[in-house]
Every structure is written in structure tokens, then in C-alpha cells.
Length: 321
Length: 205
Picture: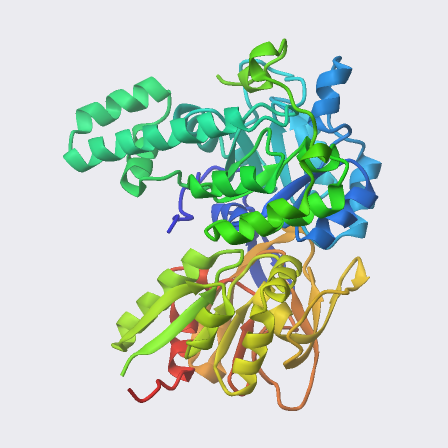
């Protein structure tokens, strides 16, 4: 089981107050990481409109992520990609009962503050948007709202967790409909986890601190992660997932759940596909059920997709520091 | 004698409930197995079921798809104890509406005679931890972890209040049904899970 400990005593996002005669605390690690635990084994879908959000909820999505443009359109449009319209986010929050997430630019403290004020349930500090600060991510302990961050390696994941991320997702290569990068990233994280676990099990503390220095994170976080043999927060797959089989494969690699970006609403059979991806994620161990899910979609209606080798813009290379 | 307890494993914090229930069995010295269940067959074989935290709309729809919903309902009607947590409380209820969105058209088990208000305390930023008590089931003090939690607004005469927070009902019992709106599985205190385990009468083997 993933512990919910990992806390920072000085975290400004932790707020104690009185409600009538009783004291309550908000924004604790348990509440922020615990929120992500409730999403486990579920599918979070990128949406740009109320109609899409309602389709996602009806299909069984555990949450929706509100964007101004789907990642593949961000790629096509070029220019600067920013956080979504607050008005659209509010309309979606009023229309669905599942949690609503939104993206802010990497390092953009005030887009994050605005999203927190808007009351979104989770903030994604995302490489899909144009980074506002190439060197510094947001210090996420300052927020009561939980954050999710992308990572391509264990080092990136641990750096984001040390900054206060309550959840991690692989970066993949957004907006391509090509799952190859997400697979590479999750396998890399898994390999690195196996490595530090074996170092931990051998009792070689010197090698463990060498890893901490290489990862540029604290020894304590590396030790805790090595002991667990997995990330200390919920870890989802993201980037390029387009079909039920993509989702099931990533679940089988040990992901806790799935983010689908352009894959659903850039396909021509969005409604059926949304439901099929949820089915395949829920019943991924059962190949027959995944086949049934795959049968619900039509490959001729999948988004065309892009080969990562031919891309001019690799979003995954943003915000790796 | 050994009890077989399942945690509905379609979605949500399944592993946490498995650990909490195993710990509860261990401290009570009761022999038993605790496992994740998804299919009607797996559910049929249980002595007790936990419906964990997660998204109730998703769990309702997926359990409808694979026929689990029907089996769960039949088992509970036949007397199998069930422990619903947060989304589990919503699924067990007869009536659920959202604080903002209003009336919901989501699949429910329609067994627990309560009207649930979803997201009653607000959105994630308003999620909170607070000390609560459940004296009627022998728990004077425990930590309540409320994550986008529902509350119980109205209830039938067979429903007993187990815990209240700030005048809102957050835990109830009706016969073999125990339901809470907070997350005991996210704390180190397994007293709620112990109480649930004690509600299960093992099959004579």
C-alpha cells in the first residue's frame, strides 16, 4: 500500500480552522494524495466543452481535465498555449459531479493560484502548455489544491514529488495518438525503481545516496521510494493513448490509471470510444473483455496519429529540470 | 471457520481497504481471507463485502455492465454484511443527488434507506480531516478523512445514526449495512474495519 505520509511541516497549503466548535485541517498530504487514490483504476479524460465533459462522465470517467484545445490541436496551432478559460471550467464544474481538473503552465504560479481560486479539484502543471519558467516548477506545498505532474524518469518524478506533487503521470508524447513514448517512460521508471529497490535491499546506503545525488533529490525520498519499490504517490499513464488496448497495456505495466488526451475526442466515435477505454481499463486483466472493448471502436475512426521521430516539438522535453 | 471478505475492485482505493481489513482480522484473531473482487462469481462466494472509496458513477456503471450490481444486491438482501465507504455509501443508498448538479441518473443499489447529498462539504479544496466519534459502535474517537465527501440528509426509521460531524450525518447502520462518508482506510486506525468484521458471521465449514 502507498503510505500517505510524506509531509512538509511548513507547507502553506495546510490550513487549520474552526467550523463552529470543531477544528478541521485542510490541504494535508493525506487529503491531497488521498484524492488521487480515489481515482485509481480509472480514466481521466481531456475535454474542451460541457458536452464533452457530460459524455466523459456518462462513459464512466473518474475525472475530466479541462483544456482550451486538445493536445493535438495545441500542436497544430503552435503559438503559446495557456490555461483554459475560467468560464468554461466553471460551466463544466456546474455540469458534472465527477472531479474537474485543469492545466496550468509549468512554473506559472499565478495560473495555478487562479485555478485554486476557481476551485478545480486538481491542478496539472503540464508540459502540454507552453512553459512559463524553464528552470523552476511551482512549489506545490503552497497550495491546498493537489497537483499532478508529468515525468519521463524516476528522477523527474521524485523531483516533482519533492516539490509537493500529490500524483504523477508519465509524459508520453501528448497529442500524437502514439502510445510508444508513454510505454518507454513507464518502463524506464519501473526499471529505475527495481534498481533502487535492489540497492536498498542490499543495504548499500552509500550507493543509495549516490542515486539521490544523481536524481537531485533528498536521500530520505529515495530511501522511502526504494523501500516501497514503487512511487510514493499514485502514478497514471498519459500521452498518446488512443485505444482500449493502449489503456489495458499500460495498466498491465503497473500504472494506477489512465489519462486520455486527444485520443477520445479527436476520434470520430468519441462516445463509444470513451466507454470502451473505461471498460478496458477496468477489466484489463481479462483479455476477452479488452477484446469486447476494442470491438466497440472502429480503427478507421481512430485519430491518425504521428510518428514521434518526425516531430519538431517534443512536449516531453519541457520542464525536466 | 474462516471468513471470506471481498473489496469491490472496479475502481478506487481497493488496496488500502484490503490492508485495513487484514489488519482488523489479525487484531481480532479471526481467520479469514481478504481479496479484490470484480466478477459476479467472485462476489457470490463472499461472506462480507466492502465497497471502497472512488467515483460512484463509474462503479455503478461498470458493475451494471458485468452483472456485479445485481449479485451484490441479491447477496445483501440475503443478509451478507456490507461496508460502504464514501462512493460505497452513495451506491448503497436509495436516493442520491449532487449539491450543485442536483438529481442524478446513476445506477444505485437502492438498499440503504437514506437520501445522500453528494459532494456535500464542497470540492477538493474543502476536503478536511477532523476528529469524530462513533460511540454507538464502541469507537469514542477516530480521525475522519473527508474527501469530496457526501452526507446523509434524510433517513428511514430503520436507519441508526452512527456518527455526526457538525450536525451532518456521516455514518449510519441499517441491519447488516454499515456506511460512512469518510475514509477510515486512509488512517492507521482500523476500528471501523474491526466493527465491520465483527458484523460478519462466518459460514460453518
